[in-house]
Image (cartoon, rainbow, N blue to C red; front, side):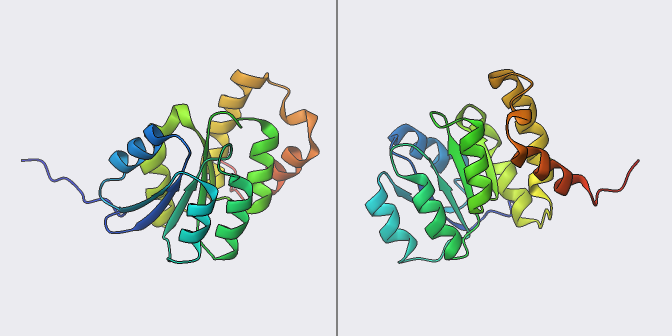
Length: 168
């Protein structure tokens, strides 16, 4: 008999905001151990952000004014992950990081969502360290290997990110 470890997300309250009902359903299914609040538009999400306390907020960017919601979510102290397809650009990644998102996940990698959130709950101090490596490969494939060199923000971010990592 296999001992299945219970997810650390069990009972966590998570707000998911996306204008695509299929994405809302997929996230609710992936995170079925948590309590999921769903919002399909900015106004509903805004109301939820100021009416409840969340363990996590998951935001789309396009269609729901995700960056404005990210500002509000971070101001309320909610760890927020950006989940996007149409706004999958280096500029959107940069904006998400600057505004305080804990993670940025392309929708075609939505299957990794539970893992990202579990790592955050378990106290993964450098979640960007783990995620950024995956994003670099993903963005290299989609935008060419020179996408980081076009913006000093990413060079500076990498220097800061890796400066305290012990060398092997």
